[in-house]
Each structure stands twice: as C-alpha cells, then as structure tokens.
Length: 167
Image (cartoon, rainbow, N blue to C red; front, side):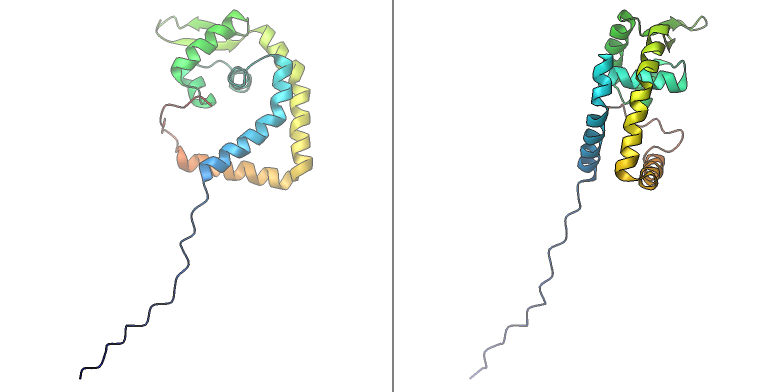
C-alpha cells in the first residue's frame, strides 16, 4: 500500500511588504501647515495665495515674463492671465509689451505693491523666526537643503517640466 505523501513544509510566513508612505500627500500636508502659519499675513494684505506668490516672486526676482512667473509660482498659464489682470486692476503689477516682440511682456511690481510688501515684511520675518524657534534653526536649514536637493533631482537645470497645476 502506498504511503500517503506528506505535504511539503510551508515556508516561513513573510511579513506583508510595507507600503510606502505617500510622499506627495505628506508634502501637501506640510505645505498646508506652513501656509496656515502665513495666512494671517496674507489676510492683512487682502491678497489670495496665488497673488501673494506672484508678488513675492516679483519682489525677489524683479521683472519677469509670465512664463517665468508660471514656473516659479506653480500657476498654470490660463490661471495666471486672469490673476495678472486682477492684480493690474488693483494697481499691484504693471505689464509692458516688449518693443521687439509684441507677443512677449514683462511684469513688474507697482509702487503700491512694493509698499504693501514692505508693510508685511516684518510680519513675514516673525513667522520665519517662530518656525525656527519651534523647529530649531538647524532643522530648518536641513529642510531647505533637502528641498533644494529634491527639486534639483525632480527638475534638473534646463528641464521646464510639466505645466504647473494651480496650487
């Protein structure tokens, strides 16, 4: 009589592969927490987050073309057209066509926008100081370094990348 077969020993159970944490979601949550700290300053200006990003970019970089603003501020081109029109109506930006190419334009801050930015620059600095007090200046410096490294990998020099989303 044939002997019954013994089933092979089952392998040692392996733990389920650990799911990766959702990095894009974590970055969005961190952004939300940071923006919440800056929101009182935005409220003082009466500007939207998009408008303030544009104002800040123009303050840092000077006169820019709309495509450069789109890239720096992560605002889509169709959205930017409307935002710039509203900002121009509020006397915050000035748009000038280039003499040699009427399709291109330069966007710059008006004196009113410069004054508005100066009025809240102390408040902005207070938010940054409080972040450093809460997190430690070394940690804040590490975050800047890590984000610079991440951005360099995700958007190497010369890589325009995809059209930015409204954020």
